[in-house]
Amino acid sequence: MRGFCVPDSATRETVGTAVLRPLQQEDAARFHQLINDWDICRRLPEAPFPYPLETAEAWVAAAVADRAAGRAHEFAILDADGSMIGSAGLRLDAARGSAALGYWIGRRFWRRGHAGAAVAELLHWGFAELPIATIEATVAADNAASIALLERAGFSPTGRGHAKFIGQPGASLPVMRYAITREALALRHLAAPEPVAAPAAAKPLVLVAACALVDIEGRILLARRPPGKKMAGLWEFPGGKLAPGETPERALVREMEEELGILLREEDVAPFAFASHAYDQFHLLMPLYLARRWSGTPEPREGQALAWVPPDRLDEYPMPPADRPLLPLLRDFL
Ligand SMILES: Nc1nc2c([nH]c(=O)n2[C@H]2C[C@H](O)[C@@H](COP(=O)(O)OP(=O)(O)OP(=O)(O)O)O2)c(=O)[nH]1
Image 1 (tube, rainbow, N blue to C red):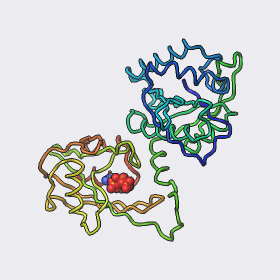
Image 2 (tube, helix red, strand yellow):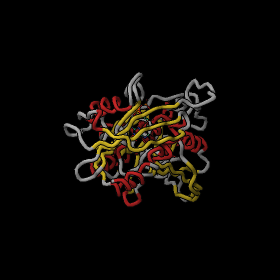
Image 3 (cartoon, protein in one colour):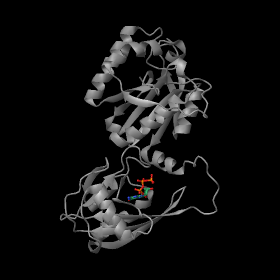
Image 4 (cartoon, rainbow, N blue to C red):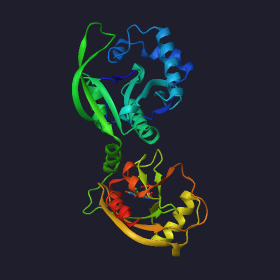
């Protein structure tokens, strides 16, 4: 089901604590109990009203099958007690590298920020786990609460149109289309204000040491930032922030052991280039080293995916903006 339902006066002050778990067949009765409400169904293009129990059972069964086939990922939204309070999901369009977002929340749970929390979580999960670059959303043009929610989540408008809502027979209603890219979400999180931000005269300078490990075939190791981290889903050079008193070389030895389980010696890393990039909250200064020798086989120790990438294919891996100027240098050198 692609569509949106949140209360008209959803407030932005409340912060939900939504948790998502894959929808399962046992959820059908609760799904039916929650969704069978005119104020929810009228905003969901594919929801009839009244919403029969059999339709809920069939919809949940289809969601389970779609998940197994990799076509769609529908979740139950749970509250802090683990009770289902709504549903949210992503339906893939593999050919376009995109997914369509939909969600709704049961009336008793409106105005607590659950929808916003669920959407934020789903965006992070989707970009980290699915082969997509864009998440799209279509929302009834008069659904001000969902439009506000999408914009708060970082979506941008991409157009207008009309769509049929089967709960409102005969009507073709004006809709607005929205989209967000993985990069826009990543940058937005870097730009998010600190909860108790004091305006600072200058941004902090953050020193991060990173290393391009180059294998015998001249391929470079990239690591994909795992869900839950800032910029989740983007590929980066392994490395990390310097601990107090650490040199960049020492930090690399530590990070390679922690992140990849390999032993890299300080004398085996060579300075190569550096990135200097103004993120909204800090200025990143990142020396990039090259290493061709280490002991052990890199393995993902922190939930990250790893890829050995030939230099001429680095462009195919979405990376943080700070890294982009480094790619032509690597291509030329290797
Ligand atoms: N390791 C690494 N970090 C990068 C690259 N490009 C880039 O912008 N960064 C940024 C992402 C992070 O803000 C920072 C790396 O610090 P980190 O790996 O210790 O940070 P983290 O995200 O685990 O932790 P935190 O910022 O949430 O404290 O540098 C890159 O190619 N490699």
